Length: 163
Image (cartoon, rainbow, N blue to C red):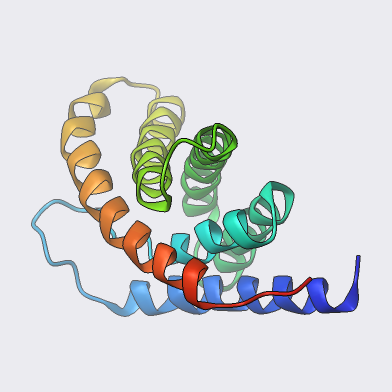
């Protein structure tokens, strides 16, 4: 891997971690627990469009591992990992079609992240009662995905990366 690309990748991972940390400092603005904006996905969508799918996967998964080690706990790792993997798969597949914008890719990632977390909750809690929480998470994932997608699209268009 070229030094330039490795440097951009490292900076993107660092930005994703910083955004995750900053988001953890923001108090919940809704009464439903667990709903977040997913600010770190700005870095993941950026990496997907500017660096490639493998690099985006690296940014996302390394961020999950590092943030869980530094600021989380084992359960948060499992939830985040499940959400990140499903989100990544959906975003990568949608982007590969070259028919969808960064916003659509981001919305897909936001919704699938929540689906992955609910699936993991069903496994860890050994109950499917949490599935009733999914409609609220799909709505929040859609709204957050739009905001994150717009921010990522602006970055993709304005930040020049030569790797």
